[in-house]
Amino acid sequence: QGLFFCVGGTYQAAMAVMRSTLALCFISTRASGFSQDTAVEYAKLAAAAYCSTTSLENWSCGAKCSADVQAVQVCQGSTTKGFVGLWDGSCLVSFEGTSGLSAWITDLQIWKTATDWPVCNNCKVHSGFLKEWESMSSCIESSLSSIGCGPGSELKVTGHSLGAALSGIGMMALHHDGWTIKEGYNFGMPRSGDSTFTKAFDTLFGDRFYRVTHHRDPVVQLPPDALIVDWHFDHVEPEVFFDGDISGGYVSCSVSDDKKCSEQYWDVAVDLLHVKDHLDYMGVKTSGDGCDDGILIV
Image 1 (cartoon, rainbow, N blue to C red):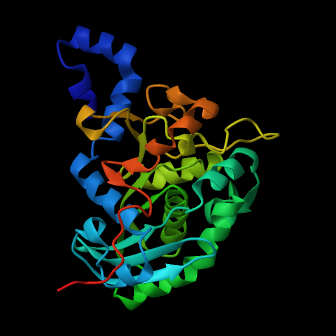
Image 2 (cartoon, rainbow, N blue to C red):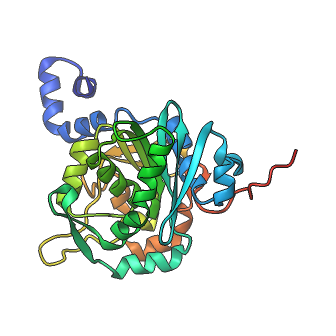
Image 3 (cartoon, rainbow, N blue to C red):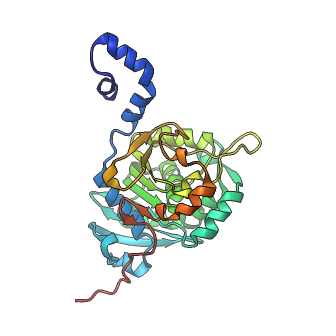
């Protein structure tokens, strides 16, 4: 249906347009399930993960906790945290990003170490991201089970920044361990693994996952994708790119480093002047800014 929508017209005209815009048609089809309104809700849930454990468990973190989420449990990792809950008829997992953003960006520019991961046939994933996931994975899985979301349950998954990387790795790991990934929206996600990882991820989740990017967000250009011996870091797809605020609409891309999307702003040195683009997704403050302290005033 997406293909016919793209070409239209007479058969001859359709074939001509098909030959010249096949890639664009593919892009339109791949991201056809994306919802801007849904993305706003996911951005709030990803941003909520920056709020205090108390405010999350009480679901009282302010505007970021506007959705009806119940049975929230928080899992602390080595440097970040995640939370699980019940939302919109499904089970939810959301991951916090890093709080020391400037130092973390510097690390990502120079730290390119990766490790083999048997979950996806010895693909390579970023060592730091995998270590952080492993520091909270047992808690995430046991907490899901404790709220009635054990293996076989459908999960909705989100995260921002480092939390987006954890979300991607977590989706692969949870699928491997028996959960069903119903949907995923990530925001400001860094490159997280090699082409073997991204191909496995795209095959499993490409029809129900969206990697949302914003203007010159520097984190989406990291780690650099320059060759490291015989491999390099890649992005998972599809990408949904907002070049301005949400009123200006978006462009969808399904090919890694497509310059119609965020790759047009590949120069990290310039992008570092636009960190604010990383801290605002879908009009939501994707950081600790805007979190209430969890104290309820009656």
